[in-house]
Image (tube, rainbow over all chains, first blue to last red; front, top):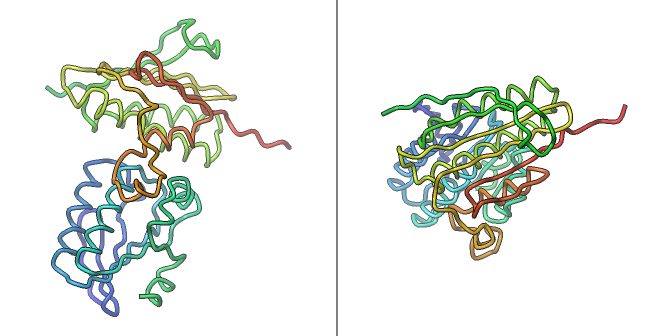
Length: 119
Length: 156
């Protein structure tokens, strides 16, 4: 398992799946979200068939800009014929996904282990 | 020119919950400036014992409302300001956000939960405001947003 630390996210490789975790408890500010989006975009665009797991462990708040970033990421992943899953979403944040119906767009698993087992 | 947020206490009979005292913050139209008024309002809310779910809702609503005012209302124009007025007590938080933009028609914002719009990255801010605040009203052709969060009271 290899790990790299970037400013807003950490990236781990496990069994061919790239696991992303956020360094911040709050994914709210547009500038940070844009930077996260750019970092993830670079990872995805270089990896055909990428298997990407974004874990929300420790994330307490997010904004609609963060949802927009995830939507763009989802599109980029499908363009390289990859798979994206989300995991470890707190009940409050999951409620945001439900209210916006984005729980229908994303493949959301309760835990990272459950997500890893489903790729 | 970087303009610091200016916040002050004033009294007025303008706030409809009849609180005589409210705070006013004026910020420039840069996204980094929304942090200070957000922080002040959240501090006031915490001092009045709003619970975690209310604070989550307000954190989200403030982020959306202030971002909208700066980005969409004022188009990040450094010559324009956003004015935030708020009053918090043990019953409710009342927040008014005003921009100096051209205005808009909230009713014309498409429903972001429509299946065709799910893959669209933006357009969810107002929907989240409506979901997480107890009352929202756009006034003055969309330039002013009035919103209320009632403090959740748990019966003992």
